[in-house]
Length: 334
Image (cartoon, rainbow, N blue to C red; front, side):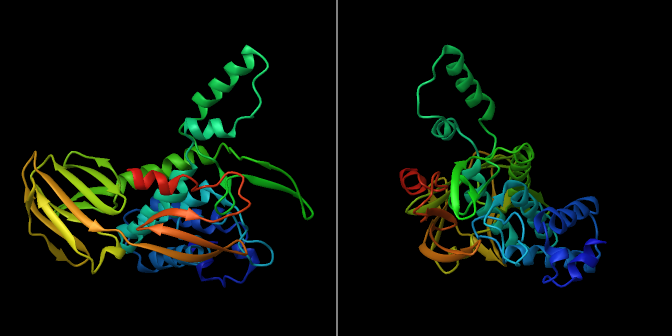
């Protein structure tokens, strides 16, 4: 069955939606990668229908359900492979005009994807609390940290990376998943974000995602706490087209170049900065709103605290390994 045919099936069909993120979404992304220069409007529309259907059943911070259960409800597990497929499809659709998906992809990457990447501190937190009995045990622990750093926790519940093994209604034990497929999938998702964050076009250099990035044309550094600030260090004489977040609309945006105010115009949905010379530093300052949203994931409601597009709180009282536990303090200190 083709992606177009599959997208046209009723979502209520359990045969169509079973293993949803491993099947139609992955197929749509793979096919659009293969047909990367397609102009087939029907094909692109079908891929978007698949994407939007999954998006409506996922968390806005990048928690993407692993599959749909037999009762039609999203399973309460997110897998990095599924998140990667969604980011891949977001970038492909954004290239074809769905530019709102740049911001969505950035939100997925800044939250669920970034939080899932293993750091030495996070790996140490997963290690047994008892002291190793032998030198060999200690060496094994150190080797594990070295080998796992940069990889990804493969899955987790909303707000909790500790998976739970159930026997009926009883929780037997929590565990951490480190699947062989999700490590490279996480790396691919990061690459796709990096690949599309800054792009040179005939109209100027597009800055599509508010992430740190080095390129031949400009270096981008983003800082967010009480306010947001984007620093652009110009490498090549170009004009720059910065795609601000939707929540920045209607709020004061101040632009300066080398410390002096600079006039920048809004052109459609981008902030157009006139051509600058190598070595110039352009700074964009903007307000970052705080808000709280409620999201229903895997049959349960969650309160999500936001600072702009960055999750700073997700209340899960029974979490064994909270996903965003250190976010608020880290962002406020940055």
